[in-house]
Amino acid sequence: MKTIQFREAVCEAMSEEMRRDEAIYLMGEEVAEYNGAYKASKGMLDEFGPDRVIDTPISELGFAGIAIGSAMNGNRPIVEYMTFNFSLVGIDQIINNAAKIRQMSGGQFNCPIVFRGPTASAGQLGATHSQAFESWFANTPGLKVIVPSNPADAKGLLKSAIRDDDPVIFMESEQMYGDKGEVPEGEYLIPIGVADVKREGSDVTIVSFGKIIKEAYAAAEELEKDGISCEIIDLRTVRPLDINTVIESVKKTNRLVILEEAWPFGNVSTEITFQVQEKAFDYLDAPIIKINTADTPAPYSPVLLKEWIPNSNDVVKAVKKVLYR
Image (cartoon, rainbow, N blue to C red):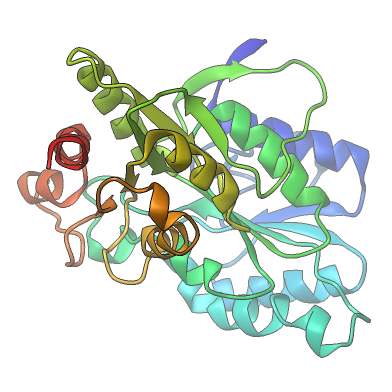
């Protein structure tokens, strides 16, 4: 094992796959000359050259369409968005072309493409740069949606995403690029659609994904002082959703708290709540609690932002509520 930053894990995954397959290339704003807006493509221009690491204009609709057409003709592009908030400019290409072309062509075309970049809040960036889009893309048949929470998962899942023959949305966080973690040496892949039990426990199941799962870890440490044992599941992949891992945990703990950095209406935690109640209702000893952001656009004020984003105290309160109600 070696310890590297999240951004380095992303860079390693892309570089290793580009060495393996010449059909793979990277394109996006500032990915080449600037080494990436968050330095996730550092050194790649020097190694692979401007034909495979391509700086684009500020035109998400244009370069998304170019990449999708390229994928339909045998290439395997990686498209980096500076933030998924900017992907809305090109979302027609993602939803109506990348996601649908295999079905609409009767299987004559596939679209092996990865759209990657940061999602959700990164601090004081304002409402138009702070939205979580996981549930938007997960709502689209034909797309796979991955949201890793640590460097090891990021590398293994990104390599799997690049090799996948369908379009994959790969979501990161600006506040995680500097996170360090142990990553296996050598070649490894993590299968898409498999959740991971990050912490074994017996009293309550906490399900989360992405950077906000750190609040679950902090809460579990605090709750352990009170003799409360928390099982933490990292979904890693939002679509396909590994609901079976969640249900097996609920059958053991009989209680479920879901932590997600997204608005409370119609999100991933809403879908998990429905599926668990449909498939494992008799195992629940308390109503499911889901913890989300406030139902407003993200504030800019640091004081308000702190209240808007879920934190470990919210998780502690939710766990005690399902245990002692």
